[in-house]
Amino acid sequence: MIEREDVIETSDGPMAVVIRHPEGDGPFPVVIVYHDGPGVRGDIHDITRTLVDQGYYTVLPDLYHRLGRFITFDMEGVAKGPGSPEFNRLITAVESLEDDNVLADTVHVLESVGGDAAADLSRKAAMGFCMGARFTLRLLASDPKGYAAGSALHPSACVTDEPDSPHRSVHRIGAELFVGLGDADVISPLELNQPLRDELSSPSVKAAVEIFEGADHGFMFPNYPSYQERAAKVSWERTLELFDRTLTPASHA
Image 1: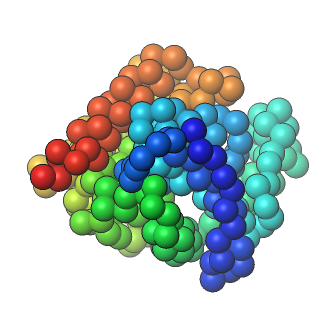
Image 2 (image 1 turned 90 degrees about the vertical axis):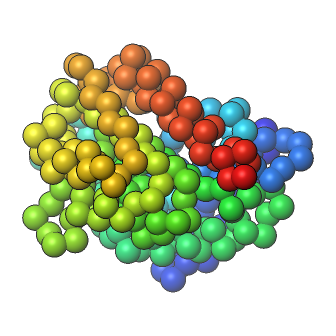
């Protein structure tokens, strides 16, 4: 596995990006990975390593770069909930992110990656968690023909009262989607995501949605108390099958 950390200039200063891809001859299909609220950490690095093991070139941008370089959080402090300093700090960081800025950052990332012979930008997908799932939907809707697939897991803030709520743009997505939801998600409950689920069920949208019984928010991450082995295993199976089917050269023949 080839691993490196690049620094890319964005409109708002430098952003660190972790690049991983297989050794050997490429080019390899590119997967953008958007982290969740707790930022770039071990669980997210492991996500990219799993993708690399399957033959993908992964791009992991530090979305919080406007606040500092790879900022981290004390998850025990976060677990104390609203009112605790660390919980409030995480929420402040999450709320600092604007969808348009994340999409602009992604453009800068792809421009940089375009100079790497190991990256095949004609075959792209995106994968995101929590707020990263929202960014995944935003990205795919912003470039309907540019991405073959997307995986959005325990998504949050995808349904708002705003006219440009992310769920309202799902109909523009041309990529195939896998969306994994937990029926015990306390941060982004199923009923809150009902308008998103309604849009995903439209005949014009190529989406597979799976609802995992007893799964809470963050079910993908082994180091979270809410980790659920079955939900994570099935989500990986669905995601990798989707990526394999849509990103292999044969699928573009």
